[in-house]
Image (cartoon, rainbow, N blue to C red; front, side):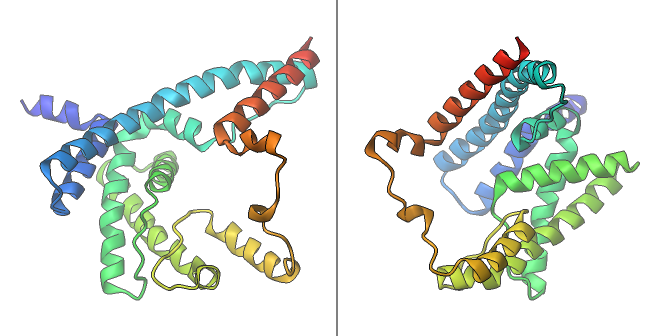
Length: 239
């Protein structure tokens, strides 16, 4: 029986679903919302892995053609694809680090001046996976890996919104919402550059697109067309 339970909990999708279940129960959600939220979390985790397999499979052929056509070795700068591949090896460690990091984040928000709760779940998952991979490469494993990883993650989750908050307040005009993203340093630099060079510039939201190009506002359509064009160019170059 114990082996059966351990086998179930060693599945990253089930473990993440269990974290969602505990969270929904603590929020006193209805039975319907709890069941639905838990199942959707598990399904989302599985879909992430399945989608990454498709992306990596497609990019494998693209990479070979690109290398043959241009003599350059490419890489895959895609969070979802890389994380999904890493989760196959470090899924359990990632889920445990992420779950405990949320607890650390709450404790920091409760007992320090950093009153920020990081709610960008997919970024927490990606970063937890990266932290797990780095610590494992450094020789950590088991309980020390999870504890150190969770503490590091919890500190980052509380600290990043704090760094961006002064700029966030200027942009939104309110003080009750923070910005949770692990690319915060880049955004701070962008804000500084915008402050210097962005005066009287037009927002992208104000740009008028021709009616016939409105379909490009759909991200899926734009990405599909872009990849189709790139595949054609690379295929021609590869002969």
